Image (tube, rainbow, N blue to C red; front, side, top):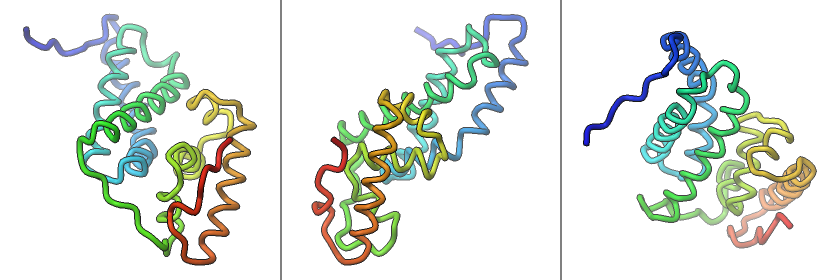
Length: 173
């Protein structure tokens, strides 16, 4: 069985490819930063981003890309998050151990529980709105705001003195 390249079925194929390229260029950097934040491995993050875009292309090739750009961004983030969680759970690559006593805010963010780390990364690294984050994570925007507020409080407290990653506890309720 030979793998067939996925091509748009409409006569606007080259135009659709260009639209998808533009979409990738606009989302490539923030989505990679998110993957790296979740996986803590540059190669694995790049691989998961690539697989995410390929799968997204296959899903949307027949529909066209212009009319679904907003929903495609949401789909891309959801798909990437799922792929990263799966990669992490399957142990594709041994993750770097967490550090005790963070010296930078990024180390402190890395020590947050996965759900909270994800919200913080989507807000501050990907620069998404509360509504967009809520749509991606399938939660109300108010819960996103509450989680960000609590995480900022915890990060601020934690950065004042040396603590272990276990001192965060559960931030989201």
